[in-house]
Image (tube, rainbow, N blue to C red; front, side):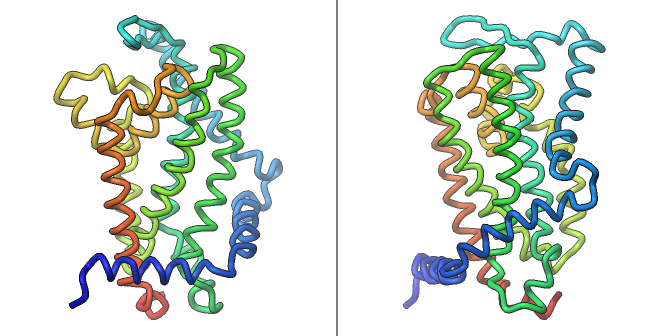
Length: 282
């Protein structure tokens, strides 16, 4: 008798085999993907910074100028009421959100956007999601570096900041696993891509990008704990602003780990269930 756990191990082994020997090609394709995204633009990859900067500016103007009484964010930290400038607070939330948003929407399109590697070239399909996610993490590293410089100047640095090296790899892996689930499904159904794109604005407001989710009323605060996107937003702020260790919010971290494992298993299973049918569909 073959158990589900054994099937998952076999499927994972297949994905690892697909990546074996393709490490150099994956890194080259990740760089090519980044260049291709901004090909023909006057400032090229500079748009990776300009576009997010403009979005942040619009929200800063709305909250700091248009709605002035919302210009300061109050956060209870270790029993003390701390005040943060709205722009500082939002930029630390927006930087991971840009990666999250791109990873959800573009990650779902990865196979369709690179169908030539499936139909015309004998290339392992799972590596498409890998080099695409790596290209997005390149952009995130640039934005995160600029964000950290700003935070260091206007807020300061601390040992807590090192937690970024925990949150960032976890975020990369989480949304890579998510693309293993969504990209094969979207290869079969373009409607699913449209559905994902349509709900992103709602997901944005259900994630504490522009507000402190820890200050929500009790039922909503518990609900936000199951939102993995919110985990990363809070994680970046805990590391850069709040000076809190990730294990101080044990329940939030445990819930995320459970979701992380479930998504990993689901991604491995779903990709291997559909991968042999993808070339015929495309």
